[in-house]
Image (tube, rainbow, N blue to C red; front, side):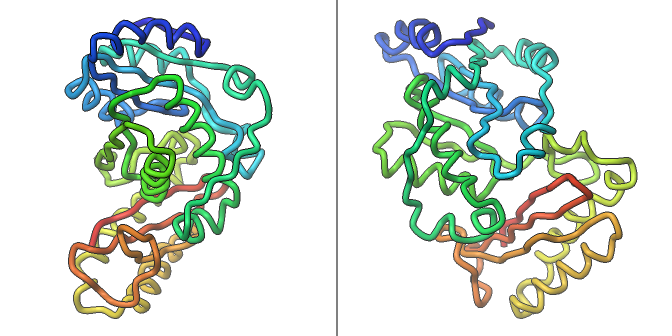
Length: 278
């Protein structure tokens, strides 16, 4: 695996592959890699001739400075993990490299960013779009891989790619979970032992809600999910929404194989998200 710190050096290394029409796959990350990230890299390797991974904690997508400051940064361990996956190129730019000047672009996501994360993290998806578009400009991949845990982000990125006419396929990859069901996240390492013990209740509740949805009005099910999670003293639900899988707009009634339940929960200072298909 070769490590690059500048856009120019990475683009130069990728040029021969482009000349020979060899498919490039790309996995953008913010580091603190876990098995969920590794699964993205493994799928990328199976489907492309060359695999590029980026590690960059993007400041423009954090609306909470404390969250940005506290985000885990484990580059040495991440590099070792990626070496073991067979990743070809690792891109680890500085903030000045990615943003030599302030990015003032504003993107129109329609209604996709007006709900859920968009309400509670204002400006977050603008920052996501800024960095994803810049990274795609550098890597120019045929395929880019994103985890379905960030369900709303995946929808936003797909919209961005369509609007900007990028010739790239956005591949959504399934959520990878711990043995007790907790969705893998770089933030999990910040949980206290008590919070870590309670956190799997999020997934357990979502899985149980799937059994109830056909016979329970949507509003009642939403209340049941929130109340059950909030019954744990270490957990506080920020939102739980049952939405149309394509538009992300709240659903008034159950429609088979058309809805997604999306949730954000605070465990102390740690914010956890998860989702489930209905």
